[in-house]
Length: 248
Image (cartoon, rainbow, N blue to C red; front, side):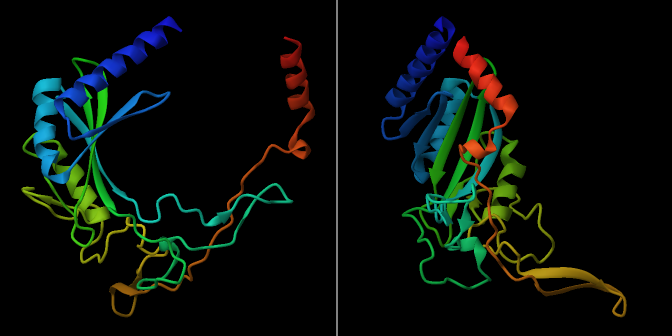
């Protein structure tokens, strides 16, 4: 317990340093894990990254990830009432459940800011990690500054985010798709990208080439299984272990 308390004190001291240095930023700590996130405006993203490298010793950026907050916090499942120990999907209003171009009534609305980029930083000398996050100002054309001038290794990370989320990294030396196929349309990690995709690919023996055709799979809502604390699922072994624990 003493070690955990000392660790918490160290994290809070680090958070206070961040708050004092970046007055306009939002610094949060996820408890009990002690994960620290600093949120900055898009126009302060690059300067904050330089300061974290030069002043706080974060010499490595181990990853850059994209986030799409469309329908964030919405639940398409009925998880309150069940007589069978698991729940049924009854709403089916998640954006990715529909075909391309569809937006049925009741679909979750976009939040105030939809797209975010998060850089995951590592300080080897201080044995510390930090998440640096910013939201793009424009959902229709999300743009943030590239971090390749601060950490050269972010080159491919940013290309991946561009490919999958469509976030533009301004100033990137070679911003091209890196995972999807030639001529791919859309960004597959966006929440409104159809889960079934837009096209399917097969080899045509007559044409002797690969052909692209409209996808033939119909979108559907699956049924997740949510196991609850129910006496019917208790086993003799589990009950014996609980009785032994009570006796202690």
